[in-house]
Length: 251
Image (cartoon, rainbow, N blue to C red):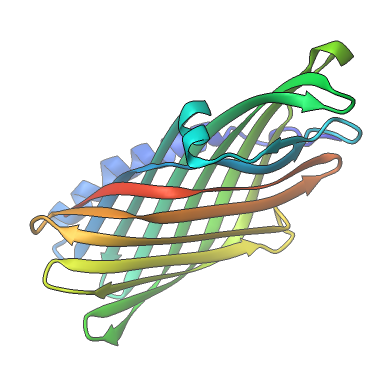
C-alpha cells in the first residue's frame, strides 16, 4: 500500500522559512553575540534514479545529462541558512526540484512521468576551531521529505500519482577553511535515514567562495543529494546532482 501523507510538508517548509526570515534579523539586532548568513543558489540538478509508484507498476527511470536537466526541469528553488552564537551552530537547508520525462515502458508502450522532491534539513551542533582559520561544525538533526510522483501509461489505462512524506535523522559535518586573502573552501557532508524514514540518505557539497565585501560572498561548486526510500510497493532510489552558483549575505 502507498503511504498517505501524514502532514503537509509544504506548509512546514513555508512556515519554517517564514519563521527564519522573521526571527533571524531580530536575533542579530538584539544580541551582538549572534551572527548568521543566508545563501540563495542556483543548482543545475535534475533527478537521476528509478521510481516505482506501486507493486507491479512500471518503473520510471531518470538519467539526464546537464543539458537535458536544463531542458526538462519544471521548477527549482534552493536556500541555506546558518546562525551561530559562540560554539552553538544552527543550520537549515531547503531544496525543491521538479523533473519530468517521456519514454517507453515494456513492451514499448508510451509513458510519461514526473517526480517532485522537497526536503527541509534542520540541524544543530557545535563549532570547533581546527587552527589556521579552519572551522569544523559537527551537527545532528532531521531531514523531512515529500516525494510526489506521477506515472501515466495511456495504452494500459494507468495513471497514478503517489505521495510519500517521511523524516530522516542525520549526522552532518561542515568544514570551512581559508585559501587566500578573499578565497575560502567550504565542504559539507551528511548521512542518515538508517531505516527510520528512508533506508539511506546522504548529501555532499563543496564550494569555492569569494569575499566581495564584509557581508557578501559569491560561491561556485558541486552538490549531490541522494535518497533510497521504500514503503510497501512505492520505491524511489535516486539523486539530485550538479553544479551550483550561490550568493551569501552575512549579518
